[in-house]
Structure formats: structure tokens, C-alpha cells
Image 1: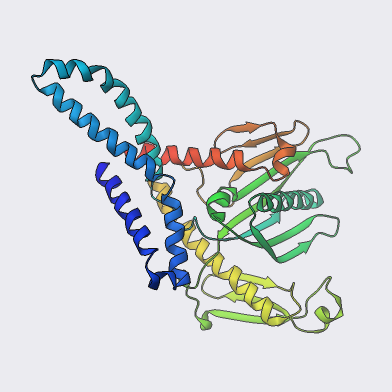
Image 2: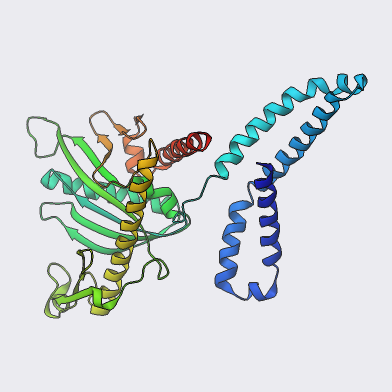
Length: 355
């Protein structure tokens, strides 16, 4: 533990030194990368120094206890107990910080929401989820851009794909992937019977060029006339794009822009992120065979949460968490759920590390 902490201090000091180097300051990309890591380490460094100081103090006290100086032994015997308790509290906090970091946590994301079973009611619920995530974006001052939006004729949305950019977007939203279920009385239900519908959420880390290498021969690109809203220009030109990744069979379409070039760029962005997500899903499956429990396995078919409107209740089935804050959460106040999911995931990792 002490060795790890000393390496952490050295890493922090090296970062501070590099960030004052004029050559690095002039390299915006490199400086930004170092600054992000420096910012991540800064809050924990005082605790690291405090732990090392208290640890050394305890070592000195224990050496005195082994000696023959009765007067010194009497002086320190009352401070050893509290000192050990302080070290245990600090150690717990530091162990969480030292857990292996998900390499994708700092990435932006592609968020995909699709209505599932339940017809129009499912499409309306998908729209509710979309609004909830957009409000969460606003709360965090994240930027979003709609890549594709497919409305449902009877109201709501069949599918929406949106790009979200900001600090630690994937770290906060990665636990949202899975099946979200709603229980409520539809407006069209005259007998007052509660209906159950569902929507699927997929949170994909946005792939960078270094993450995924796509070979042109692996792609089949088709153009076609866009359908639906968008005006005459959209419908009269073949601006819509369909990209098929031949090795995996993944298909991405985009028609929201009037420019074929822009639609192609957006479709490729989504395709790269889906390919990266396939790799992550494969890795998670391999890990889940070794891990007894996981907060998130990456399984898109897993039912993760129920939104019960009559009771004003939300239940997250992965951690058996029930909150009677439905309206508040649907208005974008997701932080309580997200933090509890993170804490549970940390507990699982810590228990595995101690085995």
C-alpha cells in the first residue's frame, strides 16, 4: 500500500513538473491530457500525504513499544488506538481510488434509446427516457447532438441516437444500458388498468480513430432518398446513408442531414462506437465468468429498472434500490441512483481484490 501511494505522489509531482515545461504547454493535446490526469489526482493527494505521515508515526510508536523506555511507552500508548482507526478510514478511501480505472470512463458517448414491447405506450416511454437524459446533460453542462431520430406515428419515438460530450460522460452513464420497464395507466385506457411497456437503452463509449480501425473493403455503403419530415430537398436527393459492416453484419443508417457527406460521417461515428462496444461486451463476458457479481454485465437484454407511475416509485433491480422519487428522477436528477451504482460496483471490486 505504501509503495503504491509513494508512486502516486511521484506521478503527481512529475505531472506538475511537465505541465510547467514550455514545450508541453505549447502542445495543446498533450497538455490537455496531462491536465486532466493532474485534476483527477489533485483531490486525493492531501489524503495520501496524511496516510503516509500517520503510517510513519504509527511505525515509530510501535518501535517505541518494543523498547525499554517506560516513560515513552506510557506517553504513546493512548495515541496508538485512535491512530490505527484514522489509518483504517483513510485506507478504505484510498483503496477505492486505487481501483483499476475503466479506460473508457473519460470518453464521450453515443446514447441509443429504442421503444420495445408495448406499442405506442413504449414509444411514449422512450421519449420520457430521452427527455430525462437530456435534462441530466443540462444539469452537468454536457453538450448533445441528435444523430438520428425516428418518430412514432401515434406519438413518442421509435428510436433516437444522440452524441453526448463532456467530462466523464461514460463513467456516469455506463450503468444505464439495459431494459427499462414502465408501469402506468395509458391515457387511452378507460378501465384504469395498468399497462407494462419497455424501452432499451444502450450507452456506447464514443470510439476514437485509435480505438477502431475500419477497412474500406469491410464496408458496404448505400445511398437512398430520405423519408419523412425534412422538406423537399431531403426527399428529392439521395442524401440518406446506410452502412453495413460486412464482418459483423452491423447496419447503421442516417438521414437526418440534407448533406450525404454529413450523414455518412454521423453513420461512421455510430458504427465505430458500436464496434468498440462489441469488444467491450466480449471483454465483460470474459470477466463475468471470473467475477461472482457485477452491477453491469453489458447485457442489453437485462431488465435493470422499473418506473412505476401509480406508486411514484423507481426500482433498480441490480442493487435492489427503491426510491419514491419518480418525478424528480424523470426530470434528470439521476445522480443519487448513479452514485449508489458506483458504490456497489466499488464494493464488488474491493471484495474480489481481498479474496
